[in-house]
Image (cartoon, rainbow, N blue to C red; front, side, top):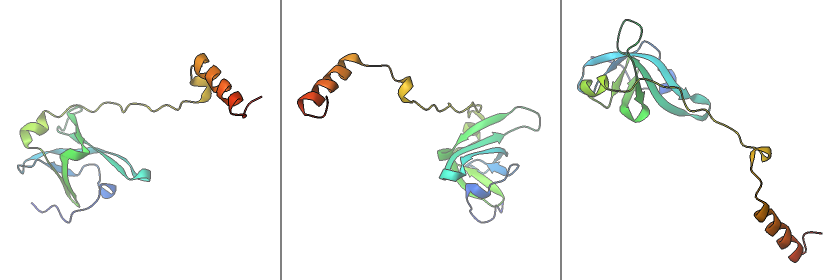
Length: 121
């Protein structure tokens, strides 16, 4: 099988064939999971059937190499069949000053230290 030159996840296309480490075709790339703006490759979603469903999550460290015309996984065909279904990524949250629970003792000690050190009223 000629997969072409090795390349980056940035050029990986959906529909590209995926092969296990033992050389068996195990499916096609359904989605590339990445954040190109910060150069983070998280993995791929592997489609193992021609029907709906059959998606498996392949973590980035389970991808051995990416080529112009195919992907080689770092796992064998039997392991590829047992890869988990993809799940939503955990959300991120931003915490601001209004979200922090006040710590009265810490605040009192901080004010006392400020007074002792001459920084406060």
